[in-house]
Length: 395
Ligand SMILES: Nc1nc2c(ncn2[C@@H]2O[C@H](COP(=O)(O)OP(=O)(O)OP(=O)(O)O)[C@@H](O)[C@H]2O)c(=O)[nH]1
Ligand SMILES: [Mg+2]
Image (cartoon, rainbow, N blue to C red; front, top):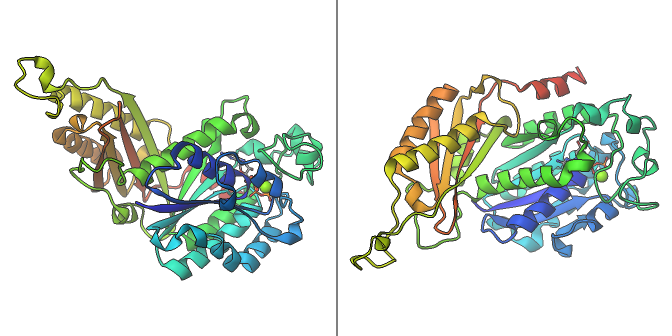
């Protein structure tokens, strides 16, 4: 499906920048835009075209909002139509969905995202999804070394941004005392406005001694790859291979619903040997354009492995008991590996694993690929522990 991905605030901008670097030419990435109040943060992006970076909110003086969500909401509300117009050069009307990427512990991104979601809905009437990057408990730990000074802590603690460059260029080691409370408020506001929320729990992806400032490159690559796998699944670049089961925007919409529910994303890949083409068996009976084949049991076992890993491995957020009302399974890889029987078996296994009677599925053939992959989206899940903790911070 063709999506316009909008990164808001520091985290959102860096993740969209990573998408531009790794998947910018893929067909699903119909538009990529970064929006922030913070000029230094936008400047520090490396891959996104300059004209796809947009700074708003002059009253912030070109800086970030230091976690002041109230200020962020006000700016978002008063700039919603301006932010909507900032997409105009990228043909927003052909997007099948919008994806707002935002670190919900912050202020600029989290403040603007709900108002922009309303604006996009009003203008385009296609689903808007949110990728909500969750703060870690350490982000808002009052005893954390960096969080103590609170206001402007990021600058004082000497971030990558350097003196005088505002709150800046990269994620800082500074604490954000309000991160959890902001996250609770922004998650609530988003779920009232967007079709579905895909949380991404930073804490699951950091090693115990790491902060987001140390690991954002790696972690943002994880977020970006998962978004690309899901939204790119129905948009292969090869015109000569047709999926058995095309995945389109309405399949994703059916899987995740339209009520602002939480959806979890699992993803796994496995490298496979390029299949033998028939012609290698010699005798010149077939030329090399003859489709390659893979032994059924080999394909079944590769599919089984990636589907299990995508389902049971570390995902974007923990799913209590793995249970889901609805699930979407997408498998991809070289066509010879996308064995019908293997996919059907994978669906049955997933239905059993999630307890869901509603499994949607699709396949994403990639003739030049050397990996098979699986994506598993779960929706209608019980509340993940980390979301409950975050909500509890304002209860
Ligand atoms: N995965 C990831 N998370 C990040 C990154 N930067 C920040 N975060 C997380 O996102 C939260 C919000 O940070 P930002 O996105 O910088 O906040 P902002 O929207 O710019 O808001 P203000 O700076 O307060 O105006 C932080 O508390 C972190 O949890 C990043 O590059 N990658
Ligand atoms: Mg910022």
